[in-house]
Image 1 (cartoon, rainbow, N blue to C red):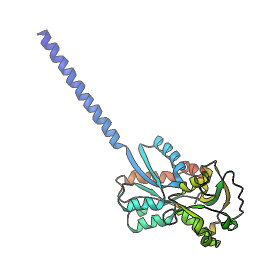
Image 2 (cartoon, one colour):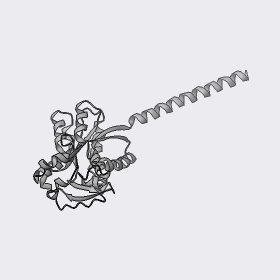
Image 3 (tube, one colour):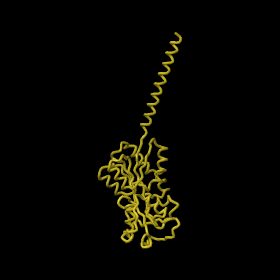
Image 4 (cartoon, rainbow, N blue to C red):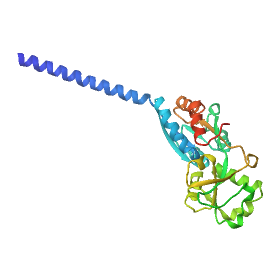
Length: 263
């Protein structure tokens, strides 16, 4: 009889333990479900700054961020083709405008988060010296790297600046097109291009290049980075909160640290 009672008590404890284990597991699963997971497609020029923003944001929010960095045009096209994206951050207004026209981003969430400037760079040991874009001696250069103006905003700004000083037509034969502004930086760092046009923030990220001159603001469209929540996002509220965070003092201080400029 004593053995039977002991056996029954043991089975009760075992079943209770299993029940608690299942309950704890269910609770943990629920906690994981409560954590938001956002996919953010952002212009390649924002890579370093957003890496730091990600670390800060995930420390203070119950949200996991996954970034997809590339040229703004390529990212916009991915969204047009149905890629699962929660937030889009473009390096110009044009690509955001296109998605807005196609009702692929929520208009009421669209916000300008930061700005930038275009600079002309050369390798750190280069002896080239220009006081302005108009001083470029095209005939003495073999390769000039810029982002593809059709899909890379930095390339479009560069082309506009060269056109403004009547150099584009003669420079075009020496132009090497890159898939994004970070590839332009790599071309100049490795010596595959003598000069290149990148954002000021990109130039500051490398110790292998030097800034020769800055493109005058009036020679190109304003460089503004708009952000918006996509209409297909299943995390509308969390995505909106992230964009709000980008406008706050902490995120803006990070952008400034990496060479971005307030609007």
